[in-house]
Length: 199
Figure 1 (cartoon, one colour):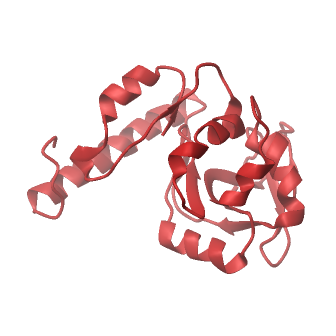
Figure 2: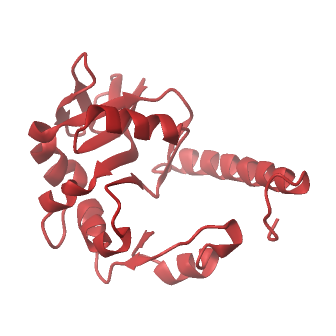
């Protein structure tokens, strides 16, 4: 888990992950490194994996991870992006994709209230992506993805719930969904489907 602002609170909340039967390792930024810089800093935590999933911490996307990883491995590109169509893309940059699912370009936020295909903030990367990330502050969206297009970047469109908590309304919506998911997890635990002593 890449952390920066309020990192200690995050680590105190989640600990080492044992209570969810998983292992959490932290990569803490001492100063802001951007989305790509944070990923580069965390390289040593990846072990010897060939592919890995990256998720933005300020958004929620309903996604089938198995399907997404299979899609990535079939395409054999360096990166795959989970995308979705929105009615108003004014808050986001958009993704241009050809008929085969290959990403051909990116457009920065333009502020127009038009529909568009956007990134859902979930990615699968081949480890070789790290060779294209410079040391220090860098952005995946602005600095890295445009440079990777020639190596193969693919998009898989999603149809599930998406929330970007960048507005008060979306933040409130995220809180409601989080509470529902937590409640569902606790009900699973009560039925014996999931062992979490914290519910």
